[in-house]
Image (cartoon, rainbow, N blue to C red; front, side, top):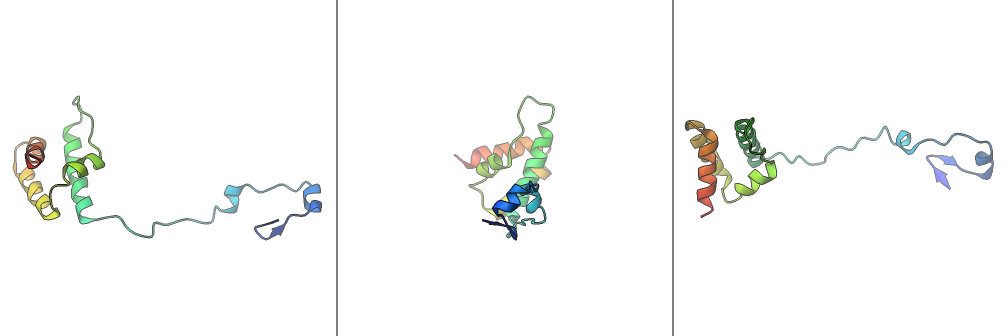
Length: 107
């Protein structure tokens, strides 16, 4: 049986050599994400999430997750999200405007 260039024989086991932990054998290997999941749509949804959740601080409502916001905005095209963002920024109440457009698009 071979392990990291060391042949384990009956003699090695009998000498009571300390066995290395698995974590120390692979500590030099770092896996990197091969593809970036950052998208234009994702950036817009993150902006909506940050702004809406900042309005929800100190209120009885829970913070919205990015998955929930993405689901609510799934009917909008990415180009329409820019229009929605502009309308929300121009309004007096960002969160109320956002919810109004989200609820009325699904009807």
